[in-house]
Image (spheres, rainbow over the protein chains, first blue to last red):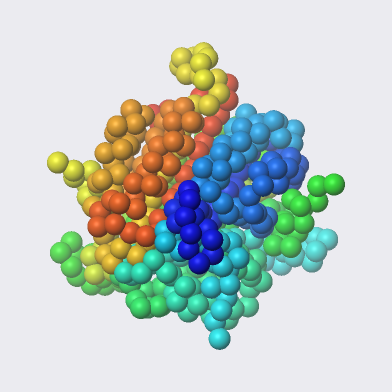
Length: 113
Length: 113
Length: 113
Length: 113
């Protein structure tokens, strides 16, 4: 988790990730209330993050990303009006040597002259 | 594909989706070149879209979203320096009666007072 | 879609894919009824398929895989006790030159001496 | 993590999950060698598991599933001929009250008379 590199980011263990959490059987097609409750946990994590229409993007040490995902999954059972089934998806992207960042990944792709 | 509703969007077939495409065996950990080539197809589709660090978000008629995904998958074999294997993921979210939009979904989740 | 190769499969457009479909707001954590209704469409597609605990695997021409996914997504709104929101995920894996198959992919990975 | 229920499974924290790990920039479209190396870790985990053509399914305590995913992600950088970029996906499905199992989920869906 330590390291260097041009950006001052660690050489390993620094990831960009997407988390999305789906409560099932809530009786409502709107999961907005659940998402609001969960978003509080995202902010409290201190990780760089961005909400999109299809999930939450985070950037930081892989252990913290896994730990946040785990807390969101548990919290979703109590979030909104509660549910008894939750499907949680996590996708983690790590490049060693030159760490990825939320800002850098989008810029790279958009840079198209 | 026609319809009504508060937003003037169709009552069925209007989706928000995430597409991400991964070329394998390219010999480089950077897939930036591929992504630039593919992004041209996204813009040409005319769909409302947004690039994120973990994929491309699009909004529009489901048939056009599937068709764009199919074109991106094929194009990825020739994009960048070329590859012989491509993994394409598509996640589509549709709500009937009150269509989802890219702008509306984020606002809903972020609205947390 | 025609071609050759050791297995007699086409050189392009032959894919292995995973489809999973999630109805939201059904009021029940069990989506078994929906899945049964949808599975009929999978069998009728004529594609080689396999049900797993986390989705449906199919193998065949990419156009047929996309078309089946589209039909499953639509059918899910009416399946089980009905719902107004459906999230559908599709992940397609294609290798050109030497097509992937459901049977070959597992055997390859499991072959570990 | 302890509990009861008809199946003797814990009432919370017991999950069915899918893990798939993609090394990028390996120079070869075949990721079979990486998968073999990783599969050893899956077996050593002691979790109930099943290899499919599109990923590895596991069943067990959520903490062990997250921990295995984390080890697989790290190991993938050294697996096969090595790589500097890895994308890892994890999808976890948990039902409280009546835990899901790999065997039960497939049987439920396939049970269609």
